[in-house]
Amino acid sequence: MSELTADTAVVAEALALATARKTRIEKAVLRVFTVHPRSGDAFVATWVPLPERGVRRALMWYVGQDRSSAVAVVERAVEAAGDDPDRRADAALAAAHTYYARRYHRARNTRRAGGRVRPADPHSRADAHGLATFAAAVVLGVQEFAADGVMEALGQSFGSPGNGLVSAQAFTEMEAIATQAECSGDQLVLPGGGLTADKARRLRETDYDTLCTVRHVLAVLVESSLPLRLASRARLQDPALRHIEQVRAGNPRVRHYLDCADFISRRPPADAWEELILLLISICTTPEKLEAFQGDVTALDPALDEIHALGQRAVARLAPAAGEGTA
Image (cartoon, rainbow, N blue to C red; front, side, top):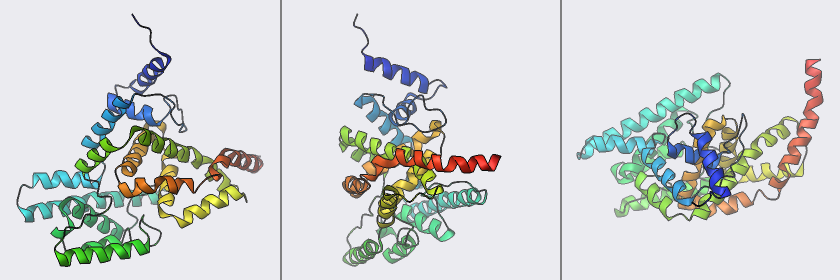
């Protein structure tokens, strides 16, 4: 009988910890893939050498059963509506608006209570309306709605300065493409649509090393979030901090990644894995995001190498103030 390798023993231990509460094996694999199995109250990146086959199977399972995205909700509503085009359009819009209305109200209540909301949560009723129209158009196609109406609604979210992942110039170009496509009768495919079938196909096509690299970089950003918060609170005047803030201000995608990382870092490790997996899937199944990802995050270097030292200096500066407050 062959003996277990060291890696096999590590994986077995990690999965045993993750499934202690009768968690589905796919969830356990994804948690171990993203978060250290012995994480306590704070997020710690994983080191477990999981086999590719198991991770891919878990990711495909997650995409197939996803109930968190608006597009997935709209897809199910459209499928249940049958073949009638009008019923399908009505079902798509109703499901999308219900989804984002709930998220808006939940986020508004969380903000009023002083809590942190997900970066993708609607910040206004107009934002929720725009996101809902976008989700319905992703599933049924812009041709099912007036292109100018879709772009106008979408502009309330993605086209607003500081709110989305699309620059003002890129949004203007997208409006022109939409108008031209409608006039010529061509079908417009919205960027980053996220249809379930497309996600599954793109995940299958994504190299495993790429999946692991994106996971690793996102984990680094999450682990960097607490030191960055402390440095900001301590009002440190540091070149690394200034560099990160400059990149953040100049690149909407980096700002989004840092905001997501900050949100994930505040979640209990038992929940943080899912938020990280959602972000990982979004990047790896959206060609324009994946293509730009390396350049986006590389722009943060070498400042990220200084993050933990930055956090230590922030703690040292904040400690006396904390002691005075309790004296």
